[in-house]
Image (cartoon, rainbow, N blue to C red; front, side):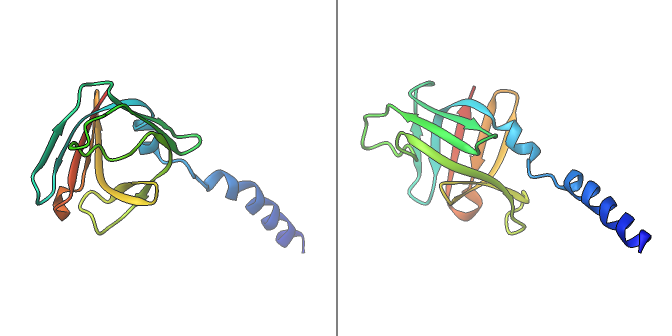
Length: 134
């Protein structure tokens, strides 16, 4: 009986410390990013935006991205209107990168973050490629 009680206490102490709900890549995307290009799809979209015209601010604590979209050109596809959207970084073995980013429940595709560039790429599925800079 003592060993069962000890094991139960040990599990109660260890299990919460083993759980890791935060994704290290979620921290990589945190902060403000400026959408500068949307390209791809079978239609051949290639829209450039002045840095700062459209900003995406990722908050990994609340898992939200706040988009401020000041684009007034209706002919340029700019992805999201101004608003606050939920985002998740999830494992997805169907994509070659293994992890994708979902925004507002939409699978946006693979992503990579380098020094001051954040690329979301769905071009493998004839989708789009988004380029954001800091």
